[in-house]
Length: 326
Image (cartoon, rainbow, N blue to C red):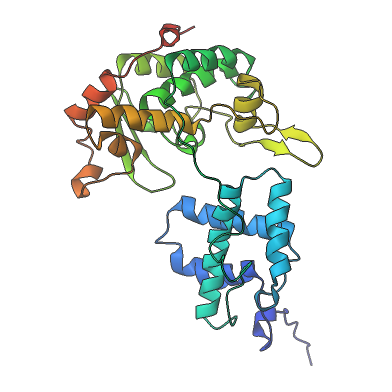
């Protein structure tokens, strides 16, 4: 008689309670994979990674308030801001709510009866003034100190300066330009930049000016991506007290000369500046360019952008340093 090897599957045990990730992978992900944007799913995964890193990762029906506190305090120790902590908690809380509806747990865990949607007091957002031409010029000059990415055909300072040009005119999300933009998205003959926003899955169609085209042509080589080598965000690692290399690290440490914890200009401030500028020219136009506002199916067609968008981008003030293509 031949023995049959049976693989152990804990889900076959009647009393097994999954961890949060196990529940997400088996119950939630199959339901949302075709509905949620990739960026939303990526945020779920990041939140789960933090949960496993900073808590005992117990089965979901055994999680206590102390686990939530460990999650919060662990993120604080890495330098995460209150709003970031609450953002990850909202992702996790939706998973717990799902588990409650499915009968896996009796009640979603909370840090307190009064505070269910957040783990810490949210930091009041202070709207920064729009970037000035002088600030953009300072960033441009700071790019000379950029050393990431290294080893490519184009020096890092040149890539960063081209990125600043694109951020200034279009205010796209960092991941859409630095990590995902390919030369297939750049339609030189049509004078159009076409890409699908990673966070919203919306098609963007943005007009290319002569100056933007010149900068893009100056960095075009044999790579698939417009900005090759931008693969890691980077961050400050509280333990062991050093920077992890990446584009956010380069932006803060090298280009601006900031130390851990110091405030400076964020890449997202280009986006906010573009929104303010273009909405001031034509109400709602900045939202369209940023991918916030899509009035209908026609807004996703390839015959856009309209003359209004080209005119708004043409009216964008240009820092003198942008004319340096060297």
